[in-house]
Image (tube, rainbow, N blue to C red; front, side, top):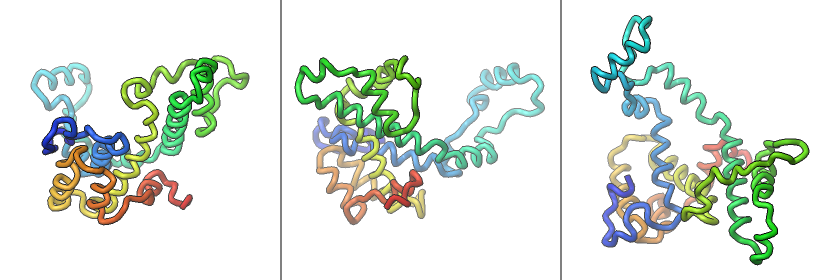
Length: 232
């Protein structure tokens, strides 16, 4: 969406091509609509409704079903999904903090010798467990190489994994301030398009978000989103 609606003069700053501290915010903002009943239903479609071929495939796979599935996701399934929105949210957030700490640790050694001495697998394990409290083997064996499952560390996000948390904070603030009370308001949507998506990385993102919000962004909405507002 950022690429589709960007209107920058130079391709270098088009769409998401800006500061990492903002790049994920537009996509994370869109995720908020996926946690609303009507948008979720409107974007859903059971595969059996895509073509007669798929419908016949579903019928062969479900010969005892008395009726075909609904085109849109059923209300009871929507209710179940929305009820599970914050399931394991604390663990997810703690893990993101742990991954961010590990990212900083391996990309900011004091010298090359320190990096050579570093037990990267153990640093990864310690970073995750210290924050999340999820422990592995009691004797510390079989730590594994879980860091290899996170490609962000080597594909241009080096020392920047923390941005997934900081951009989520911006997205939550924009959502609560400008959309939560009327999610499908066309005026709010157009204003967001013109003040944020149009600009890409061609202007200072911090000033751009502040102008859109009408004030500097803060973490209040994010802490509420992850059920941690009592920490304030």
